[in-house]
Image (cartoon, rainbow, N blue to C red; front, side, top):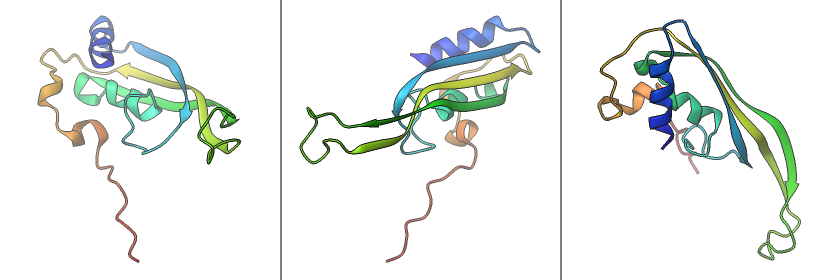
Amino acid sequence: MPWIVSREIVKLLKVGGHCFVETHFAFSSHERPWHFFHFTDMGLRVLFPAAMGMECIDACMSNPIVGRFMKQSARYLRNTRVSHMFGFSEYLGKKVAEVDSFAWSTLRLTDVVGDLKYPAPRQA
């Protein structure tokens, strides 16, 4: 439950303190920015929202990987190249405010993802 861990990290920080999280990723990024809990850079941003008193200094994906599906994969995928994979996700944030009454249940979706939206469907 990374949302519990992130809250505990923020509780330990003093205002002005910094938090750096580096975690595994090792999977093609997809459904961005809505793919939260495979530890994408967007997922780490969501775990440390402004409503929790955090300011995101930077978040990124690092160590690009190129791979191929193995011979044990489904026949139609075998040897198919897989790109846009990364080894790690990182988040650097700063605690800018003390928030005693934070609760995930009180947040709206826009509180954690801003005004990001899926692109409108293409017209045929």
